[in-house]
Image (tube, rainbow, N blue to C red; front, side):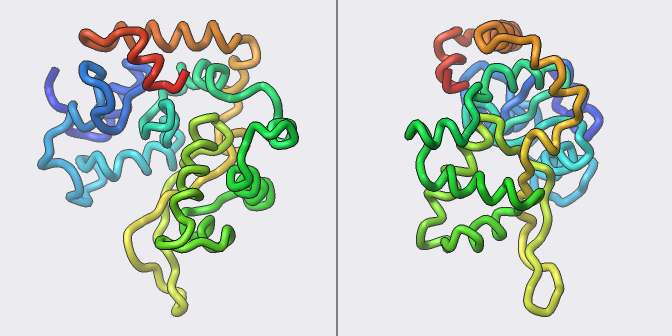
Length: 225
């Protein structure tokens, strides 16, 4: 197909496919990086820069974005979101899983932060968790990924850090929000009628339909099932 060159084309493409990884994560599976030209990226132009599209799509709630595809970054169209939620969100509460020893301390403490704060960016999270880029950030980043993969939190957009002088600085960082507070109700309501197994089969079937020479086993492994 012709390369995706504009934001609206990107939204339409994800709606057509149902889900789309940000980068090439499995040979034969479409991705945003494989369907755009390298020259488009990191220009800073909102309409044509795919790097800007990901945050804009989340901010406008046109698509879900984050480490949602088995921990890999990617996009999910509203029509398929209930299936991913049913397929990936564990049925027991995180509190019950913590009591049962099924989640680690970092994940549990991070989730408690999100229960107190409606929006947290990466810098906020590191500060509140008492870690820095060189000490402890890796385990916190892994916990952020795991909470996204299991549909507890999602990317809600991005923002720049604020310096002591009150002015923004540096590159934008992701802003995260709990899935149940960020996601439009109409995206989540159908998930109540879906089984985990049935939702996974639907997603796998769509993924295989959109792919070229991808096996069901490799797609299942990619999605962490």
